[in-house]
Length: 491
Image 1 (cartoon, helix red, strand yellow):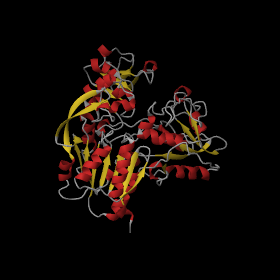
Image 2 (cartoon, rainbow, N blue to C red):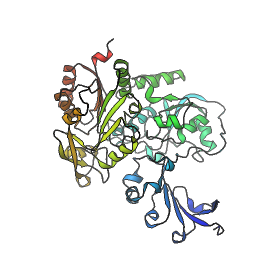
Image 3 (cartoon, rainbow, N blue to C red):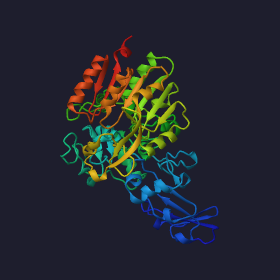
């Protein structure tokens, strides 16, 4: 180890094999994986949770690159403690609330070489290892991406060990590789290596959607597609567009018109494919709330009032995330769980027109019991006792906590007599009940979107009749129901 440096910093990382690194020096600090923890002046941990961060009392930093839903932060025993116990200044990641510690995900380092295959096929490619686990179809960010990469007109590559466990929807008991899977991983030497780029360059189109859509989450996927000369199919969070992709061009997945499948088909048709009908998947739509918001802006002048019931942390695949950036929007976001609520507050700290509320929507103001099927905060938390069974969770894993409750009437008072224009509800089985409370209070939003996934047949028939009687048109997918007042579509 270099002993001439004034200070020594211990480096720890299993993922990046730090034990094999040579020592290096920056200014007066020697960075080394070999300096003992007891003799180190500082500690730098890259990627993997390490209990050394809990044992070390000096200056320390944990740098992570995974999305907020990753197991490192929610199920890893050390990782969960680090999330709770480390100070904000002792963590660095892509979406840190403090820009000082907001370190981008590594994408590429080096000269922008563009290795190319001799000929590019008129075809589309996707290289994916993480399809989202056995319940991927319940996770909107994975569901949207999977429905694109599993199209038979996309050549899919990924680790065989992962795709052998893929569960098909709606027949989730079937576990086998997708029909368009190539049977192997894509050739690669390293994440950013020329072998990877040369492989991608053999295709005209690369479906390079991220594993999630969160503020500032931008990985190597888009960069690799561009270096390979492919047309990228991508969805960029508003912060990614502004910070990393200003002036760039790509096919924006969420800006496609309503029939997403048709648009994918048209794209592949332009690339030389002959298309055939395939009804294995239910009809899938893009972000219909963006369409509803566009109708509202065309019809309404002044402030557009938005309620979101069940906002969680406002990050991954939030359908309102782009809408809430609009200056004409005044929004109230309701979330009962403390940790996601605090993330909402941090996310919108500089947006005074967005007001998070830490409560569950219930029939009366007061306190209600919330059932959380996880040791940490969960988007699957519900006011319904047996809801956890839908996810295959065990009763022993479900926590019962008390949270503040707020009635629909109390929320409506916050509008001060003005109308509610857009309502988004995702409350794990309580969606129709909440919709009824709004209608009973005399509130009929111009645009509404609610999760129907956990509703029974009787509730589905009831809400269709209710919407019809209130003068709504609606589009029903296998996940949500999007509805808008007929008057919005009329000249």
